[in-house]
Amino acid sequence: MKKLFFLLIITGTLAFSSFLAALDGTTLNFEKEMKSEFQRHNYKKVMQLYKDYISVHEGNFIPLSLRVFYSQALADTGDLDGAIKILQEVLSDWPVSMSLTRLQYDLANLLFMQGKKEEARSLYQKILVQNSKLQEISTKSRERLSQMKQVESKKKGLLSLQLLDIETSLEAGEVPEGSADLLKQIQEKNPGSPQAERGKVLLVKISEIRTEKSRALLDEARRLFDEEKKYDDVRELLDQIEKEYSDVAEIKSIEALRKEVKTKSGK
Image (cartoon, rainbow, N blue to C red):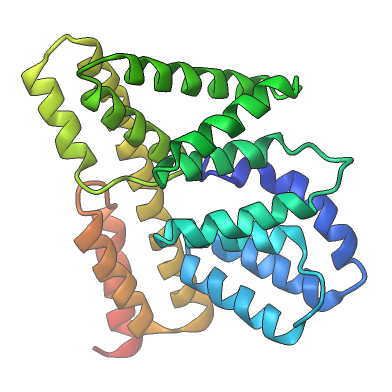
């Protein structure tokens, strides 16, 4: 998937917010740091940076890019309601001269993931009637509406709905708990079926997302080692990778970094 949902809109968002940031060096620095931490999947840091910025600029207009990063961080840490609220506020402040389509699509996916199917459907439909130049987003919205309709028209639509839920979450860069096991069960029980074939594609996607997140954590561990010399934090990240991403982790790189930490810290 795109690296994470919202990443495709960051360029356009930053183009607008950087205009504001040009008047404020502090804002520009926050924007750069939030983007950096966001790309490392360090969402707790992104959230803290946003709160730090708010505390200094209370009552002022908050650049759209910072709010988009914050919304993503909330979504990736499980606060979908918070992410939806922030993204809705961003949409209400979005310049009329810039396209809303990508933001609307990401919001529709969040609403879908949160079980607010009718609100999601309304946004997918709105994207279609806007005649957006973003053909990929329009196509995906049309496909999502079609899938929702198919699920609703079937008496035994639970499995199709589960697959749609998983697909939507993966597109948002999230791997639902237990989704890999469910997809494997579908393949075992219904080999060769359309659902099983769709499950294969989704399993590959799960592996890609997990690999990407594992590498991002490893990159952050390396940065902490090289730049900040925070060896305890490095160990903590390496432990997290081995615990949560053992199936996709770069074990040799982890072991090598552990040895470097031991050499530098003496323990």
